[in-house]
Every structure is written in structure tokens, then in C-alpha cells.
Amino acid sequence: MNTFPRHRSSGRFVLVLAACTALAAPVCAEPDEDRLGKAQGYPLGTASNWQLNPYRVGSWSALDKVPGVQTRLVARGPDVRVLPRAVQPPAISYRYRNIGYTLVEYLERQRATGLLVLRNGEIVAEHYRYGRKEDARFISFSMAKSVTSLLIGQAHARGLIASLDDPAEKYVSALAGSPYGATTIRQLLRMSSGLTFTERYDGQDDIARLARAGAGAPGAGKPVDVLRSITDRHAAAGEKFVYASAETDVLGRVLTAASSKNMAELTSEWLWKPMGAEHDAFWRIGVDGQEQSYGAFNASLRDWARLGLLLANDGKVGTQQLVPLDYLREATDPARQPAAFQPRKATPYFGYGYQFWLMPLRERTFALQGIHGQTVYVQPSTGLVLVLTSVFESASGRQDPQPYEERAALWRGVLQSLGGSTAE
Image 1 (cartoon, rainbow, N blue to C red):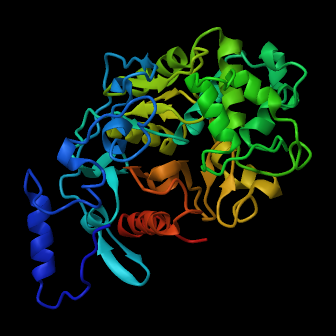
Image 2: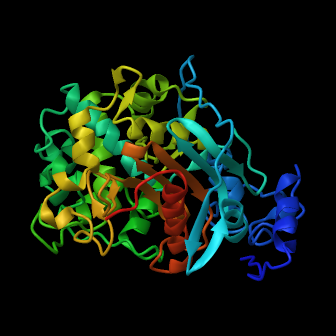
């Protein structure tokens, strides 16, 4: 990672940094660009190595072009919702480890491929890095879980799902008689099945088994076989939050079974077209034809921002309520969660709603988050949205907390710089 000296008395640092970022072709190195494949033009990988360096930048912004990876298009509609640009964008700064930084310095310090800030629907800042452009469709990893949740809320409102307290097996016959089949949709939304599903990102855990099955690896079985194999229990259902991507995989199967449509069709009809998306998006699909609802939705930076704006507007586009308000509040309001799921109870910092991360602030503030640094932060009352797509080396803060700490500091700085609230 590139770092810069903190001595600025001459002003030379500021001038050099401005020169690096003002040119159409940056002359300053971006963090770890050699390791990330700059010399090879940020190449695409293959179905077996797209998650590795030096293929991350190329593959994570164009997964539909990776040989051997199957995807399904999410069509945009004819009408694009314009995101106007602020005439005089305000400066954004933040503090990390008691040192002040600018937004541009964040980009010079961390491996962000895209960054966009909205305030009340206006673009305050928009940056692309490592050669990425406006039409790149960035992978979400677990931000996809929140998209899945929004579709569940809409399916329930349409009567396709009779009750959030229905067991999954009511809709997914392949899970009948299994512990996940007996788990209710609401328990799955809160990741509270009580079943032991390991997710360490070491290649030897249950999420690796599920991913291999989805990719059709020899001897991996089918994804449903993996789900049915999870039988050990660490708690009674509904009692506590324990992160488990399998629970979102089950939710995706509930959606497609209840609606008799695939998730790409639902995403297009219920979100992408009415939201006014600018670009087609896509889901990765497994060998069983099921979208990988727990981590494989891909969209452009501006369309991630439009989704954040939809959430900031409490599920409305204009006068149209796309996502039911009561469901969205249940999904994102800490005050509506049982005690065990509230901020600083579910985890040392975050609470957990219906597939959304909840922050311990007075103003309702929440996030979509994915491994390796994918993030959409939203504070509805102040109209602020921050979108980050990244290629952090570590999958999570458990392995390397530094980039995740600085990401949190940046969001706090966005709130402080643009009139948001950081009061707890």
C-alpha cells in the first residue's frame, strides 16, 4: 500500500497530490497496482482464479466476461433516473488515527476501484480507479444479501410469500425435512437459524463448500445437498445473530419458488426498471440455474448509488413506493430489532436487521457490506449515501482491520463534512 509523509509545512505534498489526480492519466501509482495487474492491463481471470491477484480488478468489474462463469442479465428500463452533479461540491475530509486526510488521499491510501457520494440525490464526488470506467459492473459480494432482502419484502407485499414466519420448506420442497427447511423466513432474514455454518474465508469452511457446489466443482454435490448437510446447532432458532451466507441462499430459493420467476427477472421488474437504473446489471448463477443470492450481484457504481438513494428515500421513487415502508423499517431500524440484534449486541459495533448492518447512531444509519471492502452506507434523514467498490487484500477485518477501520473513518468524515449526524 502506498503511503505519504505527514509533514506538509511547505505545501509541496498537496501540490504533488493535486497533480497526480488532476490529469486524465494519473502519473502517481495507485495502491498495489503492480500486484493487481496494471502491467497486464488488469486482466480477466478464469472460473478457477478470478478471485485471485492479479485478476481481481479486471474480474470484479466484469465478471460476466470471465470464461466459465455463468451470469444472468438484469435488464434496465427505458427511463434513467438522472443523478445531477452538485454545482459546487463541498470538500470532504476525515480523521483516522488522529491524522486528517482528504477524500483524494483516501483513494491514494486504499484499494478502491470506485467511490461515489450522494447528498440529497446529487453527486458530490465520483471517482474511478485502476482504469475502471462508468460502465463497469462491480461485484457486490455480500451486498447482494441486502438486494435479496428487498426482493423478499416485495414478494411478501405481493402475497407471493404469505408470511415471513412461514418455514422455508413451505416454498422450497427440496429442503423439506431439513433444519434449514424448518427455519422461518424471518429467522433467515436475521441470520438467526441457530445452525452452525462456518464462514472463515480460509477455503476449508462451509461457505467454500457451498461456493464449490454452486460452481459445479467435481465431487462438490449440489448446493441444496450442502444446505441439507448443515444440521449441527449452536443455538435455538431466532435467539441470536450469527453470520451465515447459507441463510441468504435459502432466501433466494424461497423467492424463485414463490414467484415462479428467476431472481434476475424479479430484480429487473421490481427494482432496476422502476428505480431508473442507467446500466443493465447481472447475477452470477450456479450450475443449478439459481442466482447466487448471497454474494453475486453486479452493478455499475452509479446504479449502486441509485439503490442507496432508493433506500435513503425509504423505498420510494417519486411517488411510487417500490419497497414496502414497513418492511424497510423492519429491515433497517435498530429500534425495531429484538434486543439480541441491536447495535453493539449482535456484534461489538453493528446490529443486524433483515440482511442489513445497523449502526449505533441516533439517526437511523445502515449499510450494505461485502467482503474485500464493498460498501453502501446510507443515512436517510440527512440524504447521504456513500458507495465504495474495492479490492482489499483481506476478505474481512478479522484478517486485517486497517482498511476496514479507515473505511469507517471515511464514512464518519462524509457525515461530518456534509451535514450528517454522528451522534450516538
